[in-house]
Amino acid sequence: MNFKGLKPILYGGHEVWPLVEGGKGVAATNHMSSGAWAAAGGIGTVSAVNADSYDPHGKIIPQIYHALTRRERHEELIRYAIDGAVEQVRRAYDIASGHGAININVLWEMGGAQAVLEGVLEKTRGLVTGVTCGAGMPYKLAEIAARFNVNYLPIVSSGRAFRLLWKRAYHKVSELMAAVVYEDPWLAGGHNGLSNAEDPRVPQDPYPRVKALRDVMRVEGIADTVPIVMAGGVWALREWDNWIDNPELGQIAFQFGTRPLLTQESPIPQDWKDHLRTLEPGDILLHRFSPTGFYSSAVHNPFLRILEARSERQIPYSRVEAGVHTVQLDVGVKGKNFWVAPRDRDHARGWAAQGYTEALRTPDDTVVFVTPADREVIRKDQSDCMGCLSHCGFSAWKDHDDWTTGRMADPRSFCIQKTLQDVAHGGDLDKNLVFAGHAAYRFKQDPFYSNNFTPTVKQLVDRILTGD
Image 1 (cartoon, rainbow, N blue to C red):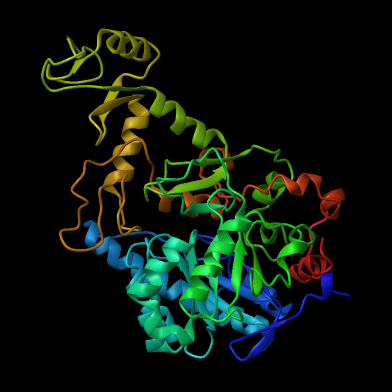
Image 2 (image 1 turned 180 degrees about the horizontal axis):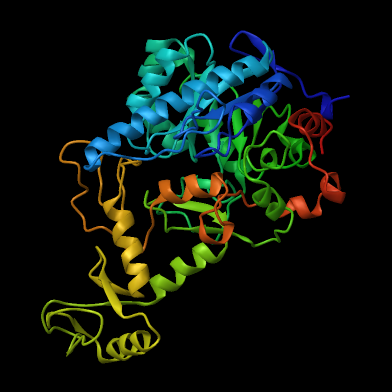
């Protein structure tokens, strides 16, 4: 018996459970997990963000960049991304064996997003049911979906964001908009759509926000049968009892991003799976170090603590003597045109004495103090940029026009492609960004996972359908 008589929905001409697998970043969701999710009757999601390709022996092909310029490496990246996502979709479709549905997920802020999406859809006609897309304002998503006759599912974090997308573009292709994904900006893993008007420290109840989204959709004439997918913080359907069959909200589906990480088919390394079982409440940090400029949620590990500490070793400066900037900085910099407050010069001297002898300028007229070794890594990562984002704060890359953001590269951030590829393929969890939703601590508390039990995707979906 399914929880509260949970009923299938019609999607892409098939009946599927209103359960969506979250499409997680670089190689954290692949054909094994998404194909199995679809085979279990849900909507599996292949991440089309620099997905893995395989050689003739089935081994993952490392994404190594050979070109000398960023623009040429960017073209290499697009080829890798298309080849990988096509391979993942084909394999996932085979695993699904006609059950459920296969979606792909792209981030609009990834480098070459439009070229990647078009390249993948061109080579997977008939295999992909829909495209979920967020991280930015993907106005062109509807137009691309229409060209390839696939459904699209925009990811938003407010009714206001959806209204902007609808008015500007989506009303022209309303028939292919299969659902709207509400991704909670406080609870979801990965990049979050927190606006400047919202306090990252004060989470809001998702119910009134989703109700407001439905109200906007109704005003625009969108039927209540078009689901809103609740994403972020979803663990057990029992906790969302008042959302199901609720006339205020219309049709609701649920996206699971974190729970599928700990399954037998999940492609993440074993030590990552093991670590998920150890997390406590508060171990996930909503931070703003990502080179995208978005807030994002990840395990609060030594990697993030290093970035926090780096930003704390930061002082403002002026090129001329002015205001409180009355003394010249005499450590970490070359030249005399760094005027700082006397107290900040004392801080800088203290950091230099601890080995943080290199001062790196930021786009905000500050300098941060790092070790010589850290400086070398930062500079190398910036010079090795392969253009994985449309706009990158860390390297100052932009994927169009003049190829630069016009701002100084920011040493307070990091190369996101480097770290996500590394952690997904066995890199040290303490030295990399480890994305996770804020409910990840529940692996340790949920009796379903006791005695080191790791379910198959089918067992997980069956468990979710009971309400637990």
